[in-house]
Amino acid sequence: MPLHTTRHSPLAAIRSQLGCWFHERWRTELVIGFPRLARLAGMDWKDLCNRREVLTTDETTGGRICQWQDSSPLTVARLYPRVGARLLQHCLKQFPVNFQRVSTPHVADPEVTFVIGVRGTGRLPQFQATVASLLGQQDCPIEVIVVEQSWEQQFQNIVPSGVRYIYTRPDSPDMPFNRSWALNVGARNAKGRVVVLHDGDYVVPAVFAREIALRLQNGIESLRLPRLIFYLDQQSSASIQTNLNFRDVQEVNRVVQNNPTPMALTKEAYMRIGGHDESFYGWGGEDNEFLDRARTLRHCEGAFLPIIHLWHAEAPNRSGDRNSQYLSSILEKPVQERIGELSQREFGRDIPSRPWRVSQ
Image (spheres, rainbow, N blue to C red):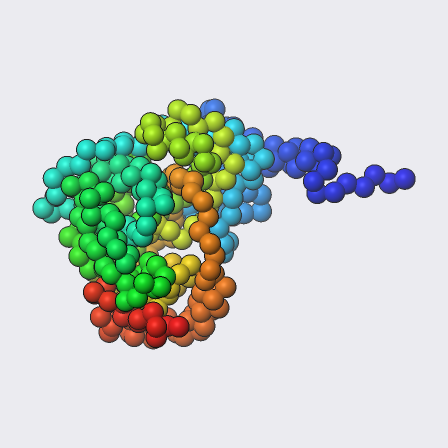
């Protein structure tokens, strides 16, 4: 009788692992274990991808452009999580993280502004570790703006004294979180030449702001940032949030490429294209629409930095399908027409430019 295997059979798993060794793992081992030899061969960690995926080099940023549409996880980390952890440690040698719990005084003239929107304290440990990595930025004057969007204030006495805090109250208690509105409020109040649209669960290297500011020069207005995002498990994340180091990270089984966030733009360009579309409420869609407009700028697709994502329970996907359909309808409108409409709105103000009840 012929031998039949299923996708989850032991034989199929062995075949997958052998295929990964042949296509992906040997390259990863070369980059991690023999970096000088890898560089002689024209490879470093930014060149790692899956079979059939094609990367090209962005000459402006030195990053890599993914020649495929959606985000994708590295197969080598999925099949060999310990290799994923070793890849993280390799990136951290080049891009170490500097956690700084103690805040510094407000910078009068920052070069880069990080904007984070928050609601609720369910992810407070992740938020605090993220802010600590931002306060640890080196060789670049920065500011951090936290925009709390909730019916009742909770973060006023949580954010460190060196972090700027802005409170915005929804127009009704049942209004879902509007990330676009939060980012617009932060960007409008930013003092920096550069605005980084950040999330409260992304830990970043100490030179993150410096590397961004260096590339947003000579007319470049917009950047894709994360070449690889390392999604950590619950145990590793808890250790980092407590100890502020990566010593206990033994496995990373999800390393994602081609993610649209976080992004960085000059503040002038952000305002010129109309900021984020505040008609998006709830889960998803706003980043994709914003990136579509950002590509009309002098925009660089080549991503060049590693980012660490801290584990948290998944948010209930209460609006994913609605927002997906809404995004499709929005993208049917020509991009310049959208820019014209959004730039004429009073975005980033005390209330959303399109109220929740109207959106319903």
